[in-house]
Image (tube, rainbow, N blue to C red; front, side, top):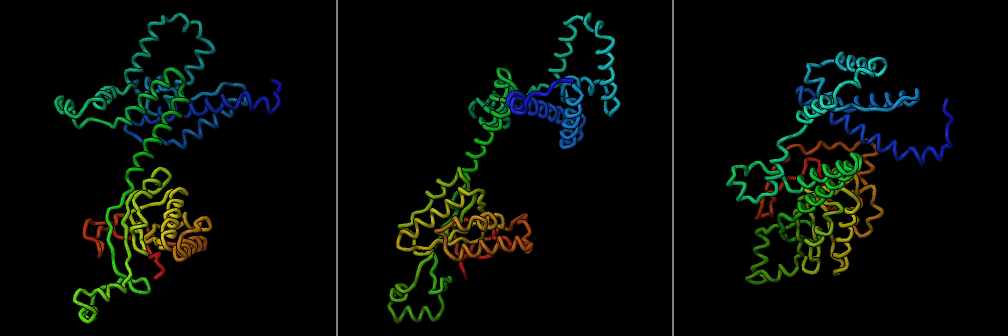
Amino acid sequence: AYPLPPVREALVNALPTALVATVVGLTESLLTLSLVAEMLQDKGHANMEAIAQGLGNIITGMTGGMGGCAMIGQTVINVKSGGRRRLSGITGALGLLVILLAAHTAINRLPLAALVGVMWMVSFYTFEWRTGSLFINALLPKRVRDWLGSGKRKIRRADAVQVLAVMLVCLFADLAIAIAVGIGLACMSLAWDLRNRIRVVDTFEVDIDADGDDTAPTAADENNSSISGRDGSGDRSRRRKKKCYILTGPLFFASAERFLDFFNPADDPEIVELHMQATEVLDFSGLEALNRLALRYANEGGKELRLKYLSPETRRIAGKAVNLLAHMSSANLTEMTAAVEEERRDVWRLEPPVGMAVARHPHSTAVDVPAAPAGARTLAGR
């Protein structure tokens, strides 16, 4: 029996190595599973593979053995040799056990060149050879790609940089660090792309009455206009204006500042509505951006910011942080709070907007915008 070291010493010394081994082993197993699924035109079960590998390594550690994971080389040889079922894996494991216990002296007599040849064939079958052309096309300008006839075979330069960075870090460091670098680069690239998708697709102004409802010219309005003046200036002077912004794209930490740059509270009327049927608030930074925008309008003579057509998920996120949104209008806060209460009572039932219909806004003259979901409700306090 091995004496157990102190718990603190064991955690300090073993935990970092255990984490690295876990990441590397699980990654290699899942990559092997993906490669085999592609070779056999079948679908693997990643969760089952991860659970089985974890349980196997726990039992192996308890019995004093060494942990392991799926090996790409042996798996490729197995599949290329015709192995398809569990019997092939069991046979390989039993053969390895026999070699370790009885035939290790014979294996030591095999020439190293034969083993190198086997590994070369494994590398040949596992390497994605078209990656080289993808890298070249990513670096070449469009004119050169068109001249070479490969204009439609280009990946983004950001993706090429990620693949190249992971490969280099894997060669000069280890797989665990390479995975962390790849995930970090992919997250930054995604955040940058989503940041540029937030935009205002249309704006328009409408007249509103004293209750804040939209008004439309009627015959009576025309008569009043003729009495007040030919241009109707007397009636228009009593009307209030409302400006509506139709937004699209995700609102989160990377797009918050870009979102705020779209608005100029000093030039907008006293009531401003944001139509957010095509916008999703993803995190607290997005909510804080709305809160800051409401504060900017409030500082410009008490102007009011209203939100309309919020998605159910945005209502849920905002409702749980409603006490942090001090500068939002009372109607918006009431609606957000009600959404959370309904969710808690398991009453909030809105079907996801699958295949949202495209409809032109009644006041819009510029672009077609997605219609609000069937269950969306106005936050203007009507």
